[in-house]
Amino acid sequence: MTALSVLGLLPRTATITTGDIRLSGTSLLGLSRAQLRAIRGQHIAMIPQNPMSALNPVLRVGVQVGEPYVLHRQATWRAALQQAIRRLADVHLPFPDERAREYPHQFSGGMQQRSMTAMAIALEPPLLVADEPTTALDVTIQAQILRLLREIRDEHHTSILFITHDLAVVAEMCDWVYVMYAGRILEQGSVERIFARPGHPYTQALLRATPTTETAQAELLSIPGSIPSPVDLPRGCRFVDRCQYRFDHCNEEPPLLAVETDHTARCWLLETVHG
Amino acid sequence: MWRLIATRLAAFVPTILATSLVLFITVNVVPGSAAKAALGIDATAQAIARFEHEQGLDRPLHVQYLDWLGKGLRGDFGTSFQNHLAVGPELVMRLPVTLELATLAFLIANVIAVPLGALAAYHHQRRADRIISVIATILGAVPSFWLATVLILILALTVKVLPAGGYAPFTEDPLKNLSLLIMPALSLGVVSSALLLRIMRAKLIEVLSSDYIHTAMAKGAAPNVVIRRHALRNALITFLTVGAVEFGWLFGGVVIIEDIFLLPGVGQLVLVGIINRDYPVLLASALTVTVVVLAANMLVDLIAAILDPRQVHVRSRA
Image 1 (cartoon, rainbow over the protein chains, first blue to last red):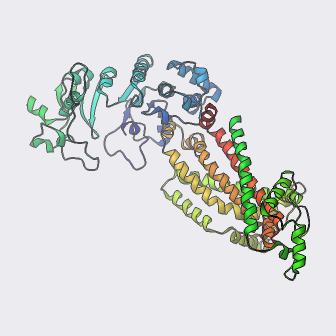
Image 2 (image 1 turned 180 degrees about the horizontal axis):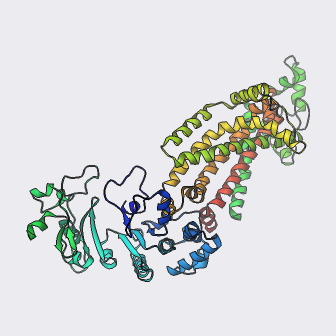
Image 3 (image 1 turned 90 degrees about the vertical axis):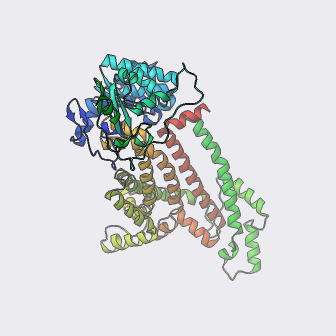
């Protein structure tokens, strides 16, 4: 949902009620459809969760990767295909000129995600939104795709908004982390600080629930209870029903409070500690 | 691809054989006497026996079937009990009329169904969608013979812009041919567009909610590009399969419309064959309809295979 709203592609039944979406200082919410279309693909591009279903089954991969050049640069299809082959080479797809003529179903999952990445970086957008880009892939391919994304970040100077529930991936990929729960940011800070000193009980529980190779565990730790329904959210703190530290003050929603420099969390406990 | 064509062709032969057998049995089991129909109710028992012996109708059924099948394979479909004309050449003459009528009707149905279905799907659950769905229901509820009568009443008898009936071959007078076929084609096509429209709408709604459509929109493609380049082709794969069935219905369902507009097509021959118990005529014309329907289905399977690269690759690997 976060990824779709950033791209302005929310379903018709959904609207953004509060907050703002800004790209390099411009608000995207006030833009017309045509202005948004000009931004999609050129300034923001998306890497999807499931590359198999995100590729059109009846179009050649080269056509799909090259399409942004036709849409935004008024390129001919011939020129766009040449660019597509170059981009496929950028994402280290072997034999890119032959592969560009093939269809998605002839690709493996890793190759499909490389193609989606090639499509996303086609016009070198300053922001990539990667929505759980490795969930549908097995572990070795995951590592390859993550390495590729880091390489793109460094070589093309691209910012990546990386959405994931995998804390190991967060530790490996991110500079700045937002911990989200039931549609709210509960904690934010640099990756080192969040992992070293998690400020919110939710983040702490998440980190405890991550299995490690060092300590053998009989059973995986989990957070008791389940995530509240978005139509029936608890009053006050979103995490209140499942929090082991809850107290009276929690029926009022806390603001983001400082844990340390450049690190805040939405929990009243921090006020108690500091105050 | 060639493998696909070969498999489809191989399945063609047994289907035709099975259909011919079922047709033959049905025609012979249905009550009514060919001899009485040909000679009149006052015919003597002697005359009837002579007629049945002459036509070979007194032989066992399986002998009759094999005899008919053997001759049919050589292109000889016998002569009509009624006017003693050879059935084969008669069919060859009439087939183009019905084919042209069914094709025209099919084109009209698609010209209505595809854009309106796409429009409804794009505006899913909004006003345009509701209006189009109501129109589709109305079109589907109109019987084609009624529409034909109304068209004749308005266009031929009141406004007098089109002739009410008759036929002229396209090769001789294309303009006259079209002016004679447009009303029958409309009355068939408009009615069958209703089903096609609903299929198009449903399939496109499904396609438009898929991930690759999100991908296309995330690239910054405008709605018309999303529909044309990314959605329509995927929706057409299913749509065509239904289209083939619909074409078969059009081809087989022209009986009444051909009669109303005095078109000398295969449908009229079927009608005459049934009324007169004219077995050779009935069998051959019904079989022709079967062959055309099967051919249309095969053609559509091949087009679908061209549109959908997955089908070709999966089958050629197997």
